[in-house]
Image: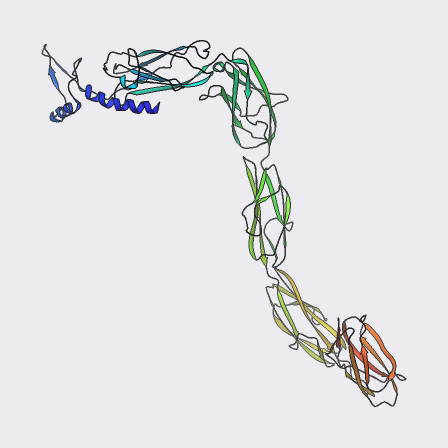
Length: 547
């Protein structure tokens, strides 16, 4: 249709050369457009006066062209079988009383041309002798089609001028119909989502399509979907549009009936409407923003409902990406900085999202020293102890152990502990806490025993600070002024005592293989007169037994 209209416009330019000027009721056909334009340009008023025989003046200039107006065509009554001719009446009018030429495209690659008085073979034969005699205002045409189907027919009326084309397009069914009309539809069962707007196209077949009517009724048990309408399609014969939206979830039952005027069929539908999707994501079983220790793992868990698919959003490369099940969990490896873990779950009509932000912060560091040493250290009986400490990534610190040390401490600082008289081992600990967690450090301080009466023995090895491994062999050494020929040797700490040998020669040397079952820890060696245990000596300070 558009190609024909363009070609008719070209023909209209030629018509512009044929008739332009109108004087009275007479057409002056020999004057060309450019000549008239020259005359108009030469006359200041732009009006040509012509005297007629009565002495009166008639004047006129061609005005803007009025397009034809096409009326709705008169279609054949009854059914039109294939291979049988059908007659149509096309009517148009023109405000300029122009003669009209027609062409009709029948939807099967056939075209009929009408020059206002008769049918012609081609478009080139249209508008060869146009006038203003109202010729061609009514046009009767007949056509037959080979196949039964719906055809799209286009008709155009032309007044033989450049812009004088009007057209109309309509559908026409060819066939006698077949049986009871049937309904075909897209998926109406769903599930669909609350809040979405929907437009479903239903199609009819069989029967006699031009007479199709559609009806929407509540089904059993109902109810009818609120806000839904069923209307016959204005552009596609044989179909209807079911339109509306679902405001609340539920199950909606309804019946659609198709009739061709003689027979009808009904089809019941049930549409499931579910709530909008929901999703909840947690980090370490917590909502919102959380903080974890740097280097630790993170547990992401989530649940969702009323969705068809879920995916990480936003994606975090190497940590959190891709499609996810409706509910599940995932272990996230160590990371640094702040990361937002999000999840979007959706249907084709709606979506829901949730996220949690996790910040990974380093653990605090803490360093506690005694008399400037990490320890363990030994101090003489009844002397003071100097403790000093530093920490980082901490907001608070707390001392533990000795009574004079326990309690809250500054992030960094120092403290002097009063002279210690409790002989043996003392543990001083410091725990510092920050957003990344807590960390502790400590120093072990041994206070030498109070001096006693002079002993006949003097332990020289081990005498404090040594580190001996389990199952290794070492020499225990001592000196003696005692006349006793036998001594006893024992391993001791405040919670453990082992008699190494209860009656060995007092020769100042004993080779000892440390048993595997001796617990690792701090110990001292005691050498005593085998017959007089009160005469003894002990290592000046603890030594270590290690695995």
